[in-house]
Image 1: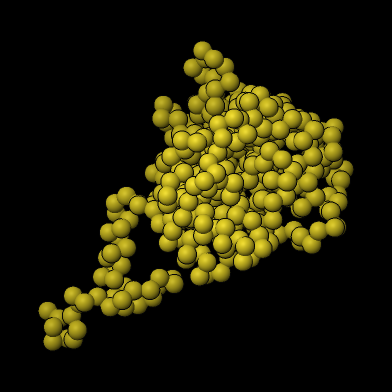
Image 2: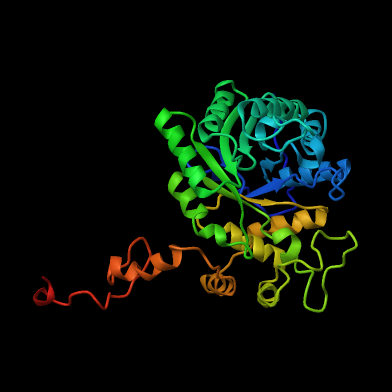
Length: 375
């Protein structure tokens, strides 16, 4: 019997959901990342704190939880499983969309302990279901591109898991765009389960995905779930030119981080000024920017404290104007590989003074101006 989710009525947050890619699966626009559940990796939160975050997230109306077989040596999955089985979330399993990943190797010295081969995949999912204490996962990600496994084998294995009822939907995490497109085409040609989602790093400081991954996902009907929208804490608002991170374990951001550049500090200056005017926080602005990007369905947040979780969830109530978005876009405009810049350049020659799907172009100066000029 399902237990209804009792929302914290002291807040004014009305649950809002989106469909994940070209599917009917409804997920919250903010996904709770569980990589911080457990302290086995030297950072993160203990079990009571993790349980409290799960409860708070569900009270907010959240329903999308993302973990992986390798997170904190498997403890992350077990914490989630315990909470839904016997803890505060007892009876709410069917109300949650639980996503986990395979591909990481949990067995030193075993070449089939990781990767996306059928043997490794089946074994990983078996152990994930055991730790999660559930009969199925709502979304199964292939965690990383495994260059040694044919795409056909990857897709056949994931389809088999769907047919067995162990998996409801499938997606790819951290794969090149051409691999994703081939995999989706393979599924489509066989009439098999399509890829529902794509998980990639995406933030104001990581926009190179806009070259191929983002347009590919939109074209192929894969909902984007960005990870690290704060670039691992660089966009937390804690650091500045005069207040660099301390290498004392209090943060994962290192003093010599390649992201702590003058360009980043200029961005942080703008974010602080914008946040002051909007009465929100810098992290909320950075997360909101990522949430607003084309193709993005649900943005993954990770937190080590309840304060961080509440602050990140507050991004739901932040609104960026078109001018504010343009300002942040200009400060973080990425250098994209060929042919991205060239295709932007030739848009004028293709559209010749027309606007198509919202994309405007100037008249092409080298175009014939009259029938007399046209051969």
